[in-house]
Length: 429
Image (tube, rainbow, N blue to C red; front, side):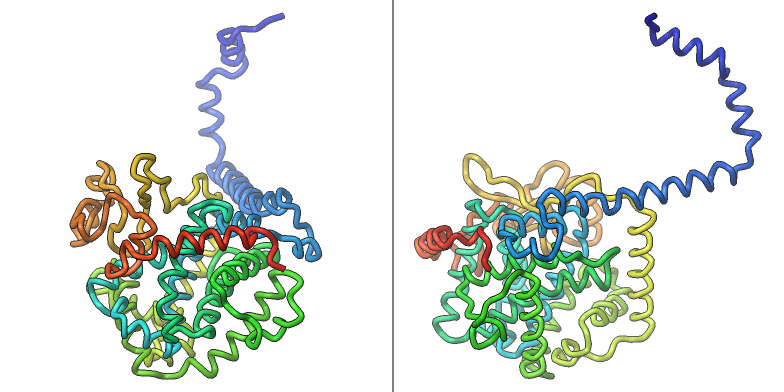
């Protein structure tokens, strides 16, 4: 016997007329409806919150510690992209931002930044900050086998090459900078986000950045304790880097007037979007997240106890809400756009810094509600100062200081071929 939709509706009305159903609902105490619904929602959040994490582990096939020894850079990049695009986008970004900030506590690194003026100059520092995030994003967010990932590392190597030849960037400086990209994201996840990273995710950071370090030509022997014998997996490598970085900070990260100057330039970048009356308190909160050793190297005062209490209270509340009361993300968080098929230029959805570098001035970007809020605050929106913010997008030869734009194309191309031929997308152990 076949039933049509009208027949089913008529039968439902016969069994339970709308008025009768409404009367039943109105007769039930609200607590008997809200409490079960709330518990059902919490259960749903709990069930779905960890579903992607477990699903990715099953998909990639890393059930235990022994299996992690065969993790490739291709798999590691997928895991890191999952963390930054789906699982923990805010604090993964802040981990890298504060991680870079942390490296300026080493006097030799700060001395170079001051000499170039790329961080302390009020104009040049804006592009420098954006391009640093941009290059890292190119090889973190794109598959290791892609042209964009390889070209991003090659461009970074070219920009560093001048200072390496001059001896103003040491191997220890490069290794310490590498260490913050390995260690800060897991540390921020453990301390500030809704869950710590599992061993597969922690291993991915060791695998990926070990391979990036190889592509950069960073030397590990003479620095890391297991460099001679080798490492069995990314966890062992990351732990070795952590031990070295901790001892290096004791020697290299001390109170310095040299380090204090970049700190004074960077703190306003972090608190840029705060209203004027909240900036001092927001600065105290930012300082509280730096840690005592970094704070002392920057010669910054100890943060006010009220700022520390508020910062960690908000973090604790956010962690609870995300873990128990929030469904996982429905959409991927994206920063980078695909290249323009005609020009090859690349643009961003969202800038890394506070200014609209490489953002297309679409109707929404220039006239949407966010743009109006930025304009009312006094900020720049996409389409403003096109000569400075390049809304047409970038080529890799554009990334870096203005004095070096257009340079190094041949060198970067040759280096990209070297990186491809090295098999850097495989397992580095």
